[in-house]
Figure 1: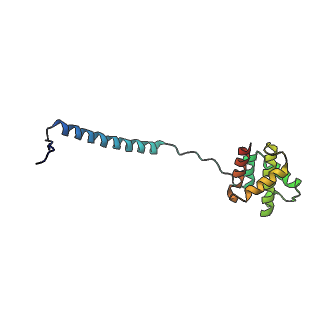
Figure 2: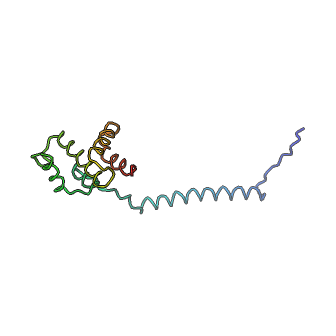
Figure 3: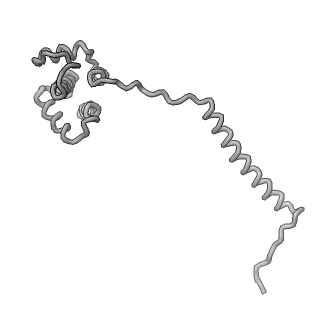
Length: 144
């Protein structure tokens, strides 16, 4: 014989009513969550995205505060005879590096331009080209 008593839940029992009520409540809870999610998706506004700069010079201006005219003056001061937009790709890279190092000195992250240039070159070897500007800004801010 079995030592455990067996219980049978009959249709009219209180236990069965409680179990059914609990199951219904759980169903309604799931359905109401789905309904609220649908309402939120219908009426929620999408996350605003930051406008991304379209050119290298716009990106540099955004992070350094330099205007395009400032960048033109940098180019002339460094001996480039063309507008930054008309430069060869390698010239654009040189000018970008000069501007970023100048910014770091201006902001007080480095006391000498040569120090900034050395650190920039070290970082340049470690990060992707597409992430270099953001990584340089972050590096300088962490340095201080």
